[in-house]
Length: 227
Image 1 (cartoon, rainbow, N blue to C red):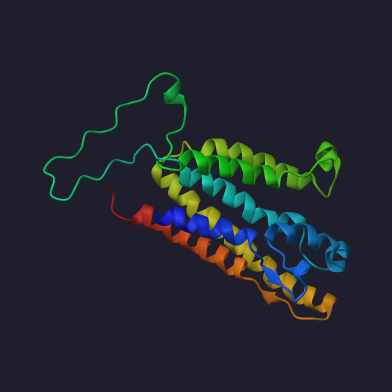
Image 2 (cartoon, rainbow, N blue to C red):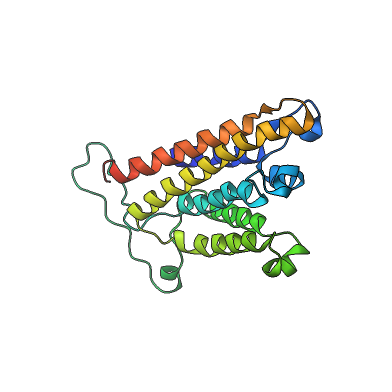
């Protein structure tokens, strides 16, 4: 349940404001900043090392984390009740078409996987830019990241426990680090452009807290006791 809570915190934080300004129209979340940053003079002339994709990387990480949390690793066994003499019988092996489908956590595994697909599709360049993104330097890398995210989302639900936990910590660390760095770089430049300081939004803090919880959860699954 801790993984679900940390993931929910990170997803909610991404869509809540990262930077806030007295003007309501300038209370921007991670996705809105991905577009807003492209209008910054520094981003246009290359003096500011930020791009649309930088703010979409945490979203791509969240999409894959949804798949990891939704999956039930094959090595996971049910924990016997306190005081039980014998271990519970293992889950019967699946056969036929069911054996090809991923085993999802209950409850909510299917919904989490659908959420991951939705987040991955949001990373895809919008229409009509999608039609020419492969030839457009501004969208080419974004299209590649979106495609790899969708492909990886199909793979991560089949990973064994330890590899799943390791990837969970790595993705959460990447998403949190990129989100942290991006705002720390953007905030001074944005304040200079508008000649007014921007406050850090609650969403940014919540997202970082959620990512940190996912890192710790992944580490504890690797080095913690086995069921």
